[in-house]
Amino acid sequence: MEALKILNNLVSIKALKELGAEIYIVGGCVRDHYLGKESKDIDIIVSLIDDITITNCLEQYGKVDKVGESFGVIKFIPFNWEGEPIDIAQPRKDILEDKTKGHHGIKAEFNPFIPIDIELSRRDFNFNSIAIKLDGTIIDPFNGLQDIENKIIRATSNQSFSDDPLRMLRAIQFASRFNFEIEENTWKMIVKNCSDIKTITGERVHEELNKIFFKGNINLGIKLLIDSGLHKQLFPNVKDIIPNPDNIYSISDFYYLLCGDAENYKNILKGDNNIYKGIKAIEKCLEKHTKILMMYDMRQILFDAYQISPSIFGSKILNNYFYNITQEFKNNHLPKKITELDITGEDLIEQGFKGKEIGDRQKFLLMEIFKGNRQNIKEDLLYL
Image (cartoon, rainbow, N blue to C red; front, side, top):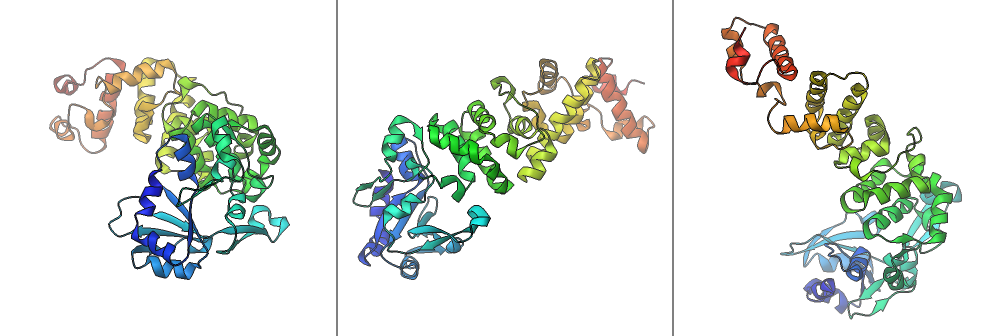
């Protein structure tokens, strides 16, 4: 395992061991190793010495970032280190202080002497609850390796989703990424607790949905979102959707299908402004399509949508008619912007146009091109 070699060769890690620390590699790094996937992240648990001792030691060998200190995690960047920061945590167990607050009522208790089995028991799924000591010893109290072999996603405990409802969405993104099956009891818990996803911030939900789009089987991910009830809880005003591999190409397609419209994307997921504009562009085309059938009008609509977001030319949600027109723009047969007209404002001024007349004339010529009455050639455009 590459992470074992790296850590065992770090002077800083050797120094922690000399202070009496027990060190374990945990999390996605371990899981991805057994899945045969490359992982850039290294997460470790350091036990038997306190956090102050850990920090004082590591500061001699690199940069210690205490941003995550309130969560019991620090990020460590050794000198001359080129990879991602190493996430270092102490063992912890979760204590429910207020049942009425759900997962918000859970407090983490950090203690360097908490056994590693207890630390692993609070993790989400069995295949994420495996640890490897720096001597290569594997700690797998929940048979996570067997679940990896059988391609199963199984909740570590019956409290997994009440501890953090986002884990329901994580189960689905893992299923879409790894082509794993969600174990029956775990699936039943997701269906039963799906309404709790509404307690999770839009930003955290957005992050998991992004993983489905960028790393997973999109259609499987959407199907599981629908079948579990999570989609309806997140977007209650969106009508039933049917995943279609031919209808999703761009990330704006993906979120248009899930969210129904740009405002849902913005208000519920607090999403990225570029994707928001991409959805608005899709909406503009689909809104007008049923009302206007003339080719030149469709060209004008697609032109206007492009001004909202150039990503519209990468959309597959638009029907074949729009797709054919898109190719006209992409092949430079049609101007995508006013500035692509083969005349300038100065040319029109020489013809006697001024002020607002210049902009009106440009729009007129653009429509003439869309109607096929003129070509985007300077001589043709200057003809009065």
